[in-house]
Image 1: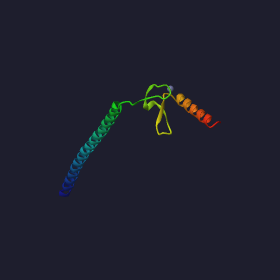
Image 2 (image 1 turned 30 degrees about the vertical axis):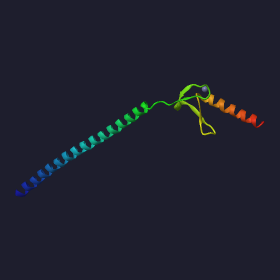
Image 3 (image 1 turned 90 degrees about the vertical axis):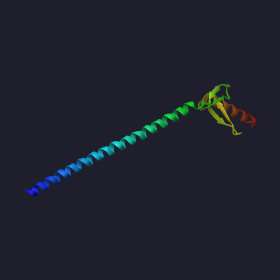
Length: 112
Ligand SMILES: [Zn+2]
């Protein structure tokens, strides 16, 4: 009889300890996911800040070589010249026309 009681007690204590461990693990998991959420929120904030800076960055304008139009540098087609400069063009077509003209001139000079 005494033995049975002892075993029951051991089982009860075992269950009790297990409960505490479970609760402890749950709390830790919650804390971990909260930290992760905070981290990803920080990452999102950083991305937003970067995007804002991108927007606030002034748009560099250049004058197109072909038709003297003011165009944003990012959208301009360009050719590097022999002097290390760049010619900007409003369109791919303008750029091609310039290249062809250059080629014709060179051919004339060389007498082809
Ligand atoms: Zn043009």
